[in-house]
Each structure stands twice: as C-alpha cells, then as structure tokens.
Image 1 (tube, rainbow, N blue to C red):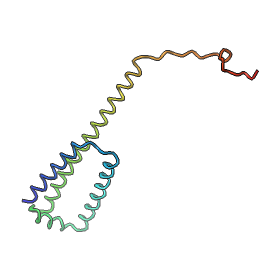
Image 2 (image 1 turned 90 degrees about the vertical axis):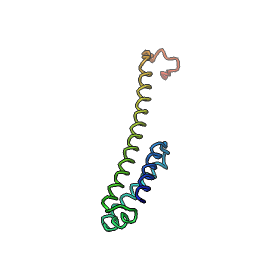
Image 3 (image 1 turned 180 degrees about the horizontal axis):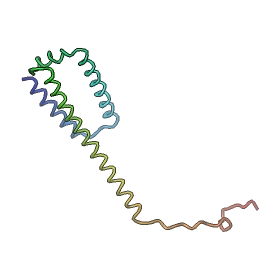
Image 4 (image 1 turned 45 degrees about the vertical axis):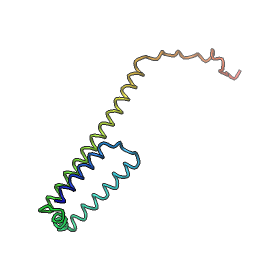
Length: 127
C-alpha cells in the first residue's frame, strides 16, 4: 500500500529533522512556510471536503477522515520533536546562565570607597 510507504517516510523525516540542529533564519523561514501551507491546506479542506476521499482512495486508505488522522499523527510527532528540542535548548541556556551567576556571586566584589571630591587629583574645582 502506498499509504504505508508515505507514513514510514514521513516518520523517518520527522526523526531526521529531530536530529538536525536548528539552522537559524532558514529554520524560522521553514517554520513560517509550513504554517502558511497548513493554513492553506485547512482552508482548501473546508472548501473541497470530498478531495480527501479521492486522495485516500489513491493512497490506499478507506476514508478521507482516516487519512487526515494519519496526517495529524505525523504533525503531532513533529510538534513533539520540535518542542523537545526547544526545551532542551532553553535548559542548556538556563544552565549556562545559572553557572555564570554562580561564578559571579561566588567571589563578592570588594566595596570601593567613594573618593572625596577634594582628594581627587584630576578633579578641577574651577579655582
């Protein structure tokens, strides 16, 4: 069945994307394009609901709703992977910040006594 091949490829793609490090602006652009495509697909699904049944028959699934369910499962897996990566990156940033704060606060800085204005050699009183 074609659907089995498509689902296995989609799951493998989610797995590979989960292993890749984010690539800055390209990663953000890809996310934005994906959101736009998902919104477009959702709109077309509302306007032409029977299309899902035709696509489902083509790939070997009984009904269009089952095909949508399979797609949502893949989308959920992708969401889980990206959320896990984002939280892992934030935890690493928090760890680095906590270490930096701990080092900064480990050795208290000596208080510097203010220099009286009359004793400052570079101070010009206007006299």
